[in-house]
Amino acid sequence: MNVGSILALFSGFFVSVVGVLLTTSDIMMFVNGPSVFIVIGGTLAATSISVRIPKMWILIKIFFYKMIKGQTVIFPEIIREIIKLSYAFSSGKDINQEAKNIKDPFLKECIQLYLDDLVDNEHYLKIIDGRVKNMHKSLMIDVNRFKNIGKYPPAFGMLGTTMGMIVLLANLGGKDAMKIMGPAMAVCLITTFYGCLLSNILVIPISENIDDSAQEIFLKNKIVVEGIKLILAKAPPAILAEELNSHLDQDDRLDWKEVLSV
Image (cartoon, rainbow, N blue to C red; front, side):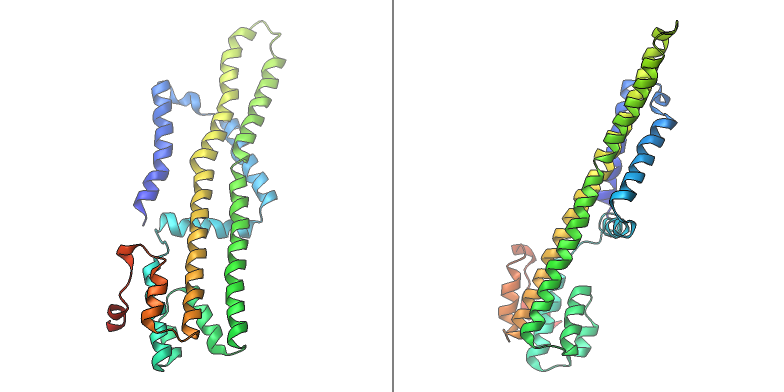
């Protein structure tokens, strides 16, 4: 579990609550049912129109695995698997057996496609390279859609404020107009408060987190394709390791001898 990310998420809400408490001792002043309904209900309605629900679940799943479960791409492990595959290819070992031990889904898919022997190597490399680009393009389209959702809560917050102002102005002619003006204005602004809070504490940070995950997946898949190209070019495991190590920080780089000795 990614405790740090979870704490960071809740810290945003904590700061907001503490800010409210520092402003007033009556926290119930910031609780308003119609405002919640307008902001959350409107956001969900607009989201369901603009984004297909299955796509939304894919993005939320990526966020859940990275932020909640703490599952991020471990690049040294990917390169370790590719080095072992390189050695299996060069030494004539059973590739089918080695493929069963692969943990990364995309690398496993690529090796299985190669073992199926449906096309020549040149066509095969075009296929897996195209899959990397298409996967990234599709994912980034969905990420951008998720980012656009961040516009909806503030917009519906303003809508609720406008509705409240209409009601307020319509009742200004009464004898108690001055008494109701202050509380009515407060209720109007609460809707905007909810919209800004939901957008800037939840939706936008999550969209940025998913964007970061998409970039990680893209880089990981590019490393996989680069490694397979080196394997098919019959590059020695030592050369392959050094080529792929260029994607890692100095402290994370692998010694191909240690990898193969395990």
